[in-house]
Length: 220
Image (cartoon, rainbow, N blue to C red):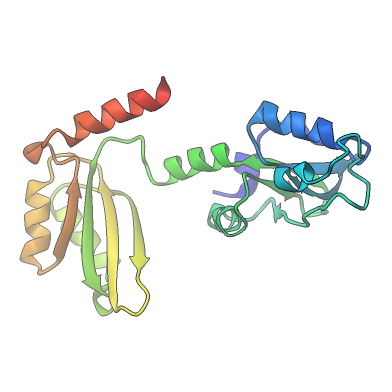
């Protein structure tokens, strides 16, 4: 998935002739702390709420030298992994997107990015989750896939986590079924260390019910 696929068509841009107050009001409207300044199709920069709040006169125009503009953007063919990296490293709530001609194409708010990640990792698909701890020398996704498929299951998504000063890795798998007791046993039979298991209907300890209750609480 690429940046151009998750651009928001709802959030308007600011212009250099807008005031600091207008920028703050618009940030409040869209619950963002960053918005792009665009003149026609030319990207000028990204303004941040914290920087704008430090300006005493909110009638100041965004083209004033006292207004700090961040030269931060991604191109339309940037992979979502790099968009996530930029959001995380710079603590952004939105990332501007430019096309191949360096014209402004749109913006990716953090909410769109969360939805894209949920789609990539099949978050909304039913299935069990298994976390394996392995040595980096034993990191064979092909062998892991063979074990899953031998149990009549498929991997919906997977990712690998590494740790500083360690040769150990964590491989998180989401598979397309929730009865995964036999799959867990298969991994253990091949000497994989099963660190965590989630959504296994055969060992339901009420965690799914607590999760559903928590999600309902967030949606209130």
